[in-house]
Length: 334
Image (tube, rainbow, N blue to C red; front, side, top):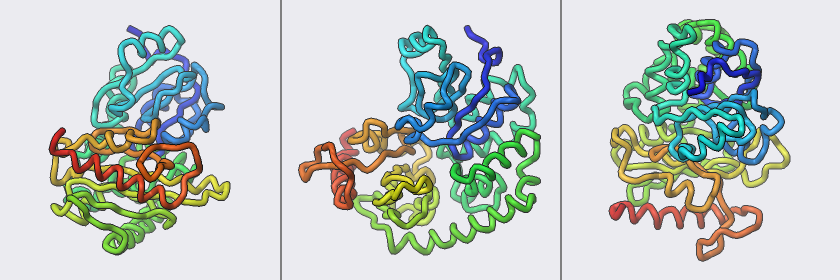
């Protein structure tokens, strides 16, 4: 078996969230001179990080890229078959996949015997809980430093993300990190936005057949399922959150119309009532994630609910939602 710690890695592409940040920090402990770039699944799939790819590039917590040298992930929809792993190895790429709660946990387990990760171990329990849907409602609504650090992360804010990364690499504890002025300022802003989102949820959400449908498109706001399900409590078994913009206007900070799906993990601690990847992959070939947390782009659909080749328009949001609701209604038969 290949000892991946002996590989020559000079670039790291990681998901731009808390899990990706900790994953990148762990690999930077192994390859201290590697450059790090934060991305997201859609950017990887559309070729946006192709210029960073070589057999010396590690891809973390993101979809597999055939030109990378090391791929580490935990998403169910990215799980490779034995044949795919073998073929990748023949092409010079090593795949490390495990169904852990977080990609950071896969990284931690992979390198803890060859690299000192004791201080990063203090992050792992909460990162696992947040990424794996195991956090309690009380923890989510608490002032836990890791919870709030996670809410400040925005991959488009390159300087801030790189600063967080370096602090973690340097071994700063979560309780000390939140006291750094730049981080404290971000947390204060996140708390304001958190309160604003809470107040918006009632006016931009509907609950149909025990799934909360949240319409945040064109509002310049993103959130995850924890906030929505914490807000609605036992009124919903899951939620779908529509976000992004109709008109991208060549603005790199705008993201395309997409939908995220989440199980109400506060109510269903063991994965939920339905495999939500069935919704995320229904029309978008690049959709996916976990059974209890996943996402996809809004797709152009005919009135009959068939995908067609054209630009996405406003009416496609309703058509996608209607088609997903039909599948959701069949959940009792799964």
